[in-house]
Every structure is written in C-alpha cells, then in structure tokens.
Image 1 (cartoon, one colour):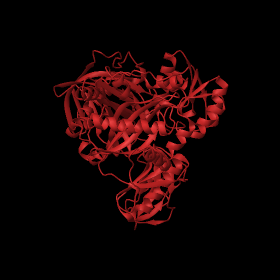
Image 2 (image 1 turned 60 degrees about the horizontal axis):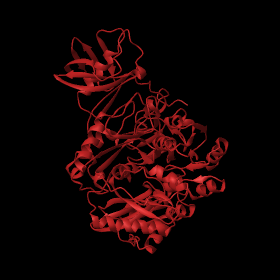
Image 3 (image 1 turned 30 degrees about the vertical axis):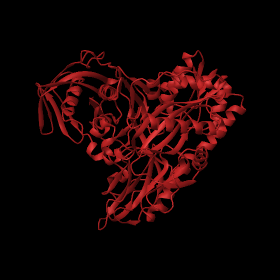
Image 4 (image 1 turned 90 degrees about the horizontal axis):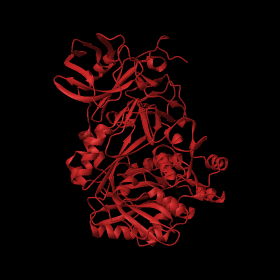
Length: 627
C-alpha cells in the first residue's frame, strides 16, 4: 500500500514510521500553517492542502500521488462517515471501520440505543432531575458538552453546547442525560476483522481530565478487578460485533463502584493507545494496516505485562488558568528511558490553529509505582523551551497521594486545581540572569531590565534582580553538546544550551534560550519566560481600562459597540482558541471604547481588545484610540 496520512502532528509521524517499517510508502498532507513540519518530513512525499477538514483536498492529494490507502489518524476526518465512503468510492483502501459503523457510533442517540440493544448498560436520559449533562450528538473530546446543576441554567447551557457543537461538527443536535458526580472514565480497546473475529485488549484508566480533555491515562486501571474487566470487555466486544465493526476502536464507559455505563464508541485510534501497546506488546497501527488489507487477527495474544502511564504535554499555561500558549520551540531534548510520541522539534512554531497537544510521554514498568516514578522523572528531564507547557503541573499531579493510590475520578483534577498549582522556583530568576550573562558579547559585567522584575545584574559572582541578590556561578553541563556562547562563539543553534548553576550553594542543571527580546529558563519541568523588551502600547492600549487578550485566538462573538454603557461583569466579547471559549468581561462599570474587532478576527496574546472607560472619566484627543 501507498498510504496517505490524512492528519498532522505526532499521530501522523507515528503512522508514517509504522508504514515504513512494513515496507510501504507514505504521503503527508500539509497546510500552510504546518509548512516544514516534522510530519511532512516523516513521509516520503507531501502535498499542500487548504485544510485537514477538506475531504476534496485529501482525495485530490491521494490521486496526485498515487496513494492506494488513507489512514485518518484521530480528529479531523477520522470519524466522518461521508469521508470514509468517499475514500472507498475513489477506489482507495480505508484504514478504519466501515462508514455504517462510524455513522451509527458517531450519533450519540443512535449509539446509545444500539448499546442498549446489545445488552450494554446505558445511562438514563435526563428527566428533570439534576444534575444533567448536555452532550452534542455528533460530539467528542468534550466539545459541545455542558454540565447543568440547576433547571434555570439549562437553557443557556444548551445554547452554548449547541453553538460549540455547530462550530466543531456542523451539527447542533444535543441530548440530555443523567450526570454522575464522581465516576471513573474507563475505556476498552477493541479489535475486529472482516472475518468475524473480535477481541479486546484490556482497559485504560482515563479519569484524570480537565474540561473533559484527558491529561493522564494508564493501563491497567487500578480500580478494575478481573470480574469487572471481564464484564466490561464482553460488553465492548458485543457492541463491536453488533455494529459490524472492523479495525481498531475504543468503547468508553463511566463506572460507579461495580456498575458501568456506556458513554460512547470512538471509531478510530485513540490518543492514548500507546499505554495499551506497551502493556500488551502489540502495535495497534500495524494491526490497523493488516486488518485493512484483509488479514485475520492473530489467534494468540500476549498476556498483559506490567503497567504503563501516559502524560499529554500541552501548550498551555497552568498559572494563567491553562490558557493556550504559543511560541517558537527554542530547545527540544527528549528524556531517555521512556517513549515519546511527538509532532514538534527545534524551531517548530506553535500557534492556535490546531490542538495544543505537543507530545505524549509514556512510561512502562513492572508495576504501577515504577511506571509513575519513571514518568515523573521523564517530565523533569524533558527540555522544551520557547512554549509554556503543563509539565510541572502534571508532575505535581502525579505526586498527589490520591493519584498515587489510584483514588481518582473524572472531577478530581478540576477540584484540586488550586492546591495543585505550582509556582516557578525562585532560583530560576538568578539562573536566567546567569544564562543571559553567559551569552553576552563582549563578556564582562552584565545588566538588563526584566519586565516585571526590575533590573538584573551579574557581576563578581553576585546576581541581583530588583532588590534580591544571590551568590551564583555557572559552568557547562557535562552532558551538554552545546556550549554557552561567549565572545568567540556566537553560533549556538537556536541560542539554547544546558548548563549547571550554583545558586546560594546549591548546584542544579538548567537549560536556557536567550534572544534580544526574552530569556527562557527551565529545570525539572518548571519553565519561566522573562521578557527584556515590551512593544510600545498603542490604540486601545493607551486608554485607561484597556483589556488585553489573555490568550491568542479568534473572536467568536462581539456583544457591545463603542459608546455602549456596561456594568461590571458584562460580557464584551468571546474568544475561542484550541477548543476553548473565553468571555472577556467588563472589570467595572463604564463606557466601551477602542473596539475595532469583529467576529472572525484573529488576536495575538496580549493584543489590546477593548477599553472600558470608568464613569466620570473623559477621553481627550490624545487618549483616543488610533484608527
């Protein structure tokens, strides 16, 4: 087969490698935003397309490159029955289940009815007893979903779910069903071939979630005993058979004690599939390819071995409410001893056009404690600069007693967000100043203003930032292949390097990247970005009460106009970025001014959006925003 991979990022890289291992050729599709991306280089050839959601573009790319099969990955068109039919109609092999199964399981109402008919336990529909959950019929990944605890909030929540579902799936239908307060999210990996064989490969625990997005997954679940595993496995296989499934898929359940209820079936490869691969010693992408070629499932399966845990590394800022993060990857060194599935590299531009997932870190061990320990260390050793990530937060989460004991549920992470918050350690400041001084040209005493911290100075073994001082010294890290730039070495790739610094007598390993505008410093998963230059403020930013974009994204709604009177808390506009909506509200009563945005406009991080001029204030010509 000559396989076109209709996806991007880490999953496209992952599929390409397995395609090559089986002696086949690969084709990548690449949008303008992904030009020069790792997944394009991972494939034998690549074709520029307008959108990963354009079936026409993908099929045209297949025809132009002589592709004979299409692997959809996950997301985008992977669960689009119309696309699956179009692939087959074009004479290509669809590496996935039949379109009829995708269509049935993609409609939450019909899927629920099919599960019930197959004898799979289902949640009762919402019947006026709260709390309930509003869910998009065509949804997935938490999009188009709202939990409602009061009847008075049902209308607004339904409208929000429908709006999000319409934008994400082109379908605003929703269902309402009973909401379980503290369930676990357990999913069963199923496989089926066209010859009637169907099996499952155990379960994955996916309860650690935020905004209905999984953060950490593991296999096996610490809460599933052999009896529950057998019952859930039998139900998952029964549903796969009932819908005529072929290929690799996942049946998701909510569990409450010894009970379990059907949630949905994902008719594709899951993001967290590596934990099953490590525990069962299989390659699920290879099995997808073999099943698509008409081969039978192997009759004998290896028994599960040990425990695996996966952490998703997201481009987001936990200290800012997990808002999306953007930037250029200025240092990228993967940790040893674990599996890393990644779609980025040194120099990658991380924006808001696509999902914030940067990489997955997966650790395996003979037991759960060992796997968790290896994952924690790997997150500490992952050197990624230029983009803020959730690495330090995930490490703190993994060290919690309830997580280590396996006492988790789908709401745990949201409940403990504040107590799990992690502040950058104070030694990052002097270490950053040392790193910047080490790249100064010419060498010698160094000083620079750091936004929000005052002047930083390095001289005679003392680092001073604002009013604080540290005794500190820097030396090259023994295992670093990159040296600190000096007066005779100005070509360090990406301006990044690893070093060891002693701060008040304690020496640690750090990595840093330095430009004229910023310093990035990190250790043990902690990350700090220090700006040394801030652009001049203009337009709406010159007004008192100016509001800046807390995240890059797209203007979804604008609810006010210049001159409108607003009260504190009124919604002015709504931004959308990376599956997330954020309302920009008035900080106080006043008059709207400086608004130049309309729905569809893209905004950058910290871009001035609008001002709310307090009552009693006036604008002179100097203060008015520029056109």
